[in-house]
Image 1 (cartoon, helix red, strand yellow):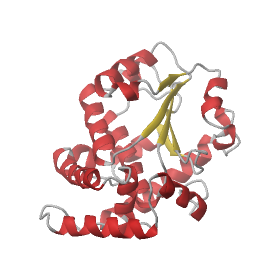
Image 2: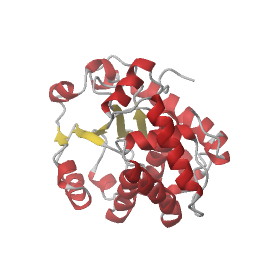
Image 3: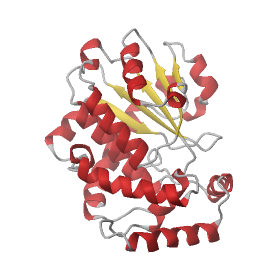
Image 4: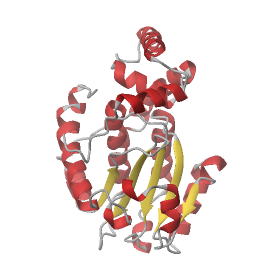
Length: 278
């Protein structure tokens, strides 16, 4: 496993995450068993991996009822929104085309607050892309993280450097609503902040779409930055960011190549056969 895609954390950080939620090993085992017992009584739900159930419990802030509701929603969304929650074969044409168009990079190091940073952007010259393919790939990344990651919240960085007026027109409200439902309701993604960097007048289009989809508390967590990333560095340490963003943690190309290789190996080899990475 490449160190650029290794989301595993050490025992000290894992204990900090648990302590923040009033959890320890014994309480986690009891909670996971309780969830498994409940799932056995739900004929529409399959068996789940203990590690994934623990991560859902973490994402639901140690709330058993919310965890059950989120699990039920996750499997319901697989049926209700198959265009995003199925056909995760990265050998298919849609995936191969998208891999040459942009990057979705969960960075390997957590912040001091134990948050995971993910960066999204397009490569230069890309204007014609399929928004459903982008959303599907983002969810594939979340699926891998449900098997490996262990964090408190998420920090999203969207780079507008190569996002043009034509490419923004590819972003549709129905597609984004489906993605938001999957990410926030199915995976219970908890967002600390969304940073829009290298912003331009086009950025306002995305903000308008976001206001139609997100609750006010998430809208308040939107931060808009120009090409001067000084303000971003006040929120996200340089040591965690790629060099292109004034950081010290590899390059976008290195991270992107490693993650695309990981998607190919894990999504085809593990997720398609229901084997889970712990």
